[in-house]
Image (cartoon, rainbow, N blue to C red; front, side, top):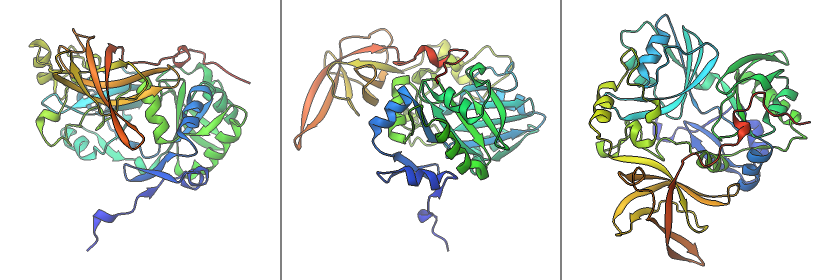
Length: 398
């Protein structure tokens, strides 16, 4: 009998290139695949994302094709956001919940037509999708292994991709997508990403992966193009204030206890809950009850912390030294020159009370940990959002 506990991680279609580019030989297990955590140094990779072009292997991202006459109706039923007026060839950021109004995951939905969508997310949800689709005329297929994907991010990313062959790409608006024929093969390009900067994602058949990788790097050879690992991605997503499943909150399907689950209102995603949308969606009754009766207990906020020592995993206290929350992600931001963090706090802290709170930071110094008591201030969670992120036409560089 085969022991599934020891199934080898899969290699992405870009592995022949990522393994050659990796000088540190550090790898990360993501959704059954192995991808680099770091190629050379995380700092250089981060710098490319903020000053040039970064290239990341996005293939392990969960991808699900939803087709059929009820595809649009089903997608609108599945998620909390009103997608009834979503246009073809656009992408939307979404979350979906269980019937108790607790978040299962967040992700993006790509609409090709009213009968064809692609859902992308971090965790495996095929069973949930199939169970939710009961009664709808839809077919759901896991296409994670059949679509190769790259994330191309940074201020020179549009120029790199124009050199690659994506003509007129600068006119593509945020959350729009377009099909291109490049070097004889099809490439879907979406103006999306997880860095909070100008950026795009490329989707194609795995047979084209190596050619795509080589051509992208050739096209960006004069535009500070570097491969980009998971550690650098963590830095950019914290600066952007983006949440990550099972890091900033536990997916409802994976939480061991109900108290660990979170509603959209508790993770700063209330703006994605459209209680007034015409059709029912999963979790609507519970979320309406939470909203109308002011039952939300927590909030996920941004913190500006004194000092320069990142508050990884720090407990947050009020001025009476009472435990009021915990840091879920932290970073000394090289771009902002600030000590920032995302933290889950017990309301009213983070909502009505935004100052006189403190982080207990344990920082290693010469084989010992030094305890630091640093003042925090609640700030906008989107720490970093340059104008170029949403600018149309996008900036171009020679």
